[in-house]
Amino acid sequence: MKRPLRLLASLASISTLLGSQTLFLPEPARSQVLVGNLCPPGTARSKGKNFVRNGTFTISPGILGQIPAANPSEFTSNLPYVGDGVYPSDGPPGPPLPLPPFRGGLSIQNGSVNFAGGVVNGVPFPGDPANDVPPSQTYLYSNPFDNFNGTQIAFPPPPPSPPPLPSPDPLLLTPVVWRQTITGLAPNTTYNFFAFFFDLLVRNQVPGASTPQILLRTAPPVAGASGIPIAVAPTPADRQIWIPIQYVFTTGPTQTSGILEIVDTSRNIFGDDFGVTAISLRECTPNIGVEKSAGTPIDNGNGTFTIPYTVRVRNLAPVPLPVQPSTTYDLKNLQLTDPLTDLAAKATINSITNIQSPTLAVNTGYNGPGNPNLLFGTDILTPQTPAVVTFNVILTPGSSSQGLGPFNNTVRAAATTQGGTTVSDNANAAVQLSGAANLLLVKRITNVRRNGATLGGVNFGAFTDDPASTDDNNPGWTQLLSTGSPVGIIALDVNNPVIPGDEVEYTVYFLSNGSVPTLATNICDLIPAGTTLVSGTSQAQSGTTPATSSGTVFTPLAPLPANNSCITQSNPNGAVIFNLGDVANTPAENVGFTRFQVRINQ
Image 1 (cartoon, helix red, strand yellow):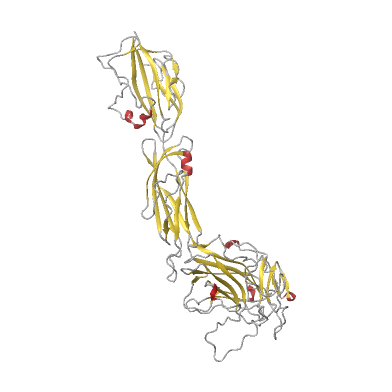
Image 2 (spheres, rainbow, N blue to C red):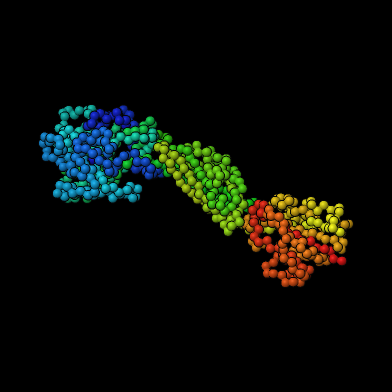
């Protein structure tokens, strides 16, 4: 039947156990600190390693009687194991029975049970999705009476000793239902114990039976307390329900192992049957939070933009309590990873500048896709401490429909807890550039031929600055194939004019330096009055491709096509229209020229 239960947790060394029925002797200094029943706000019960083995009891000890220290089930007890799926029945009060059979004890059940004429029932554990605990068919059935030597440990209570002995532990003859040595713990780390208990007594079947009471006891006692209640069933209505029980503690500065025990402290056989399963011990991991924001993009006026980014990260765990080590919730090896994947797919990253942080060790080699780590990964982030990283991305918008964005780039913050668990968080920042196409045109005379030879006294291969315009000074002209600038003269000297029969070459240089490509681009160059187009001389060169024959010739007064760029639509002396299509705004592909020759009329 159902006794009040006491859940005893100790993370002291194994040497504090004195014999099979001896629990813990008082010690002058505690090896762990109780800090509450739940993982503190700002932390979370890890979904990673469960330090409890066989916590759902799928593996049986495989014996009858005493459970040996080394057995497949990986737990021990001072109660006899009566077998799988067996009812550990209470025996009548009186002398111990011969062994076997046993009076009371332990059994692993699989599924539903119906014992003692329906007075005791059990059902499988259905799981707890809210706490990420899966269901389990198996559970440990405990009904203490005799220990494995046949010594009565549960009923009746031992007589009082006059006067009371001051030193013996009052739990010396208390049933140790479940005991497991836990290894692999980390010092100065907070852990969460979680288990589910089931009152196997059927409601109203045993009037006056005790209701379950779960107590926590640490060794040595925390703040002088011998037991701390963490769950109480107030009425028999809580029978036949799986009840979650949990608490947390912080390990000592050198502690890497310990012992967990579930102990039944009642000495009342009326209601002492209970089930337990889904036992776990997991780290309370600090939550890490990261956010990313983008400032207003800056149009640099040369076809590029600068986007300022800010990344903020914080350890969301609480500042440790005074009884805890100051490093309990520190996050180590902090790393911020921001590969700028979406931006790099839609635009060209020219450079990343001004990466800096007031408190973190930034990686000055960060460049997005090739080296995505913003930090060196050596920083420690203490609880409730914010940190920030800022940097600028200089980019040239792409030529696709999404060349101006939006750029949805995600930063990932990751760090390692005191217990070695990796925690992470992601944040996204979307940026949309607002830009326009722009096409610069510079026209020059690039040659004059007289009688088949270039006119002397004129340097047509040099750059001539137009003081009335800055268009010819744009640095983008340096990408012009072979010339590196819009060479040629603006006009001939009045002392060296053209004469009839001279052939004049006109070149119109173009530079697409907007934030987006120029679409469906055409350049119209009207034939000057008093001249005649030299047949077969119209050509164009774009980007890195050589010049080729190009352009559509329209004779004087011929109708011009729709959407042309000619200044005069009447076409008085003829025109050449060059259809360039879409002109990219990316370096090396955004410059070129159109060209034709005319002959001075007689």
